[in-house]
Length: 266
Ligand code: ARG
Figure 1 (cartoon, rainbow, N blue to C red):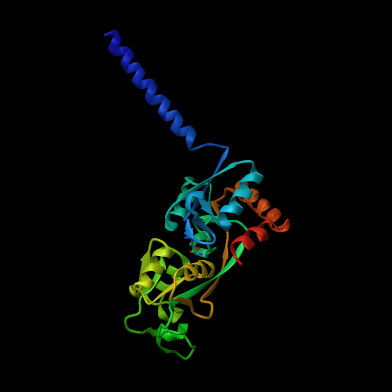
Figure 2 (cartoon, rainbow, N blue to C red):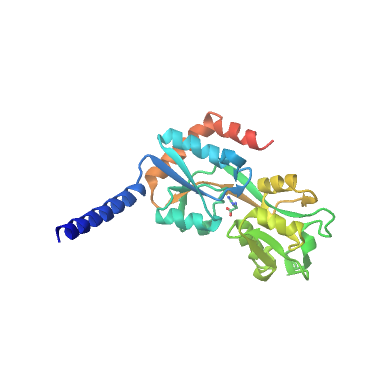
């Protein structure tokens, strides 16, 4: 009987320990957890055995240093970053993330640290040489009235490229039915190489990276949309937001951000 009681006590203590440990683990004040989607060169990518690299990764490391914290990176699907920041699972999200009115309803954004444009990648020798070429005609305002037969646009799921492409032709979209979503931009580019899609809509710098490493692709002239990148934090976490903005300002002023960008964008 004694033996059984001490065994039960042991098990209970063990459960208690595990619970305490888990609770502790999610509230490590020395760590700053950044959620990203590391398939977006030159902003974030996995650099062979060297681990995570890219503009966002290096800026985040500098911010963490200034806050006296250790940076931990969670590489997740792009579409789950905002939800994870909202719930407090991650301290902040940094993923070449565009500030949009819709996202602002879920998270708060820092000051912007980069600008970007959405561009269109096609195969070299594609019959589509401009944005206009994708559409059947235009109304009196010059806006498209319909999408040509058989056009499929590849995008990374939940990105602004996805949001624009899925919009109606009138707004220079292609309609949801003509858009194919992929887990990463790289997957969308693979689909273009194997003729599963007609074009890919994605941010300009990743587009340049993908075109550089894959033969037979080109970026169409023109800018599909202008955007600002910023870091997102949980709504009303003003303490962290202020810390991040202060760090960003210092890093901009002392030239650190320019230096990091110059390392990755020639
Ligand atoms: N700028 C776009 C957006 O915010 C695409 C970002 C994709 N980032 C990534 N790390 N995969 O929707």
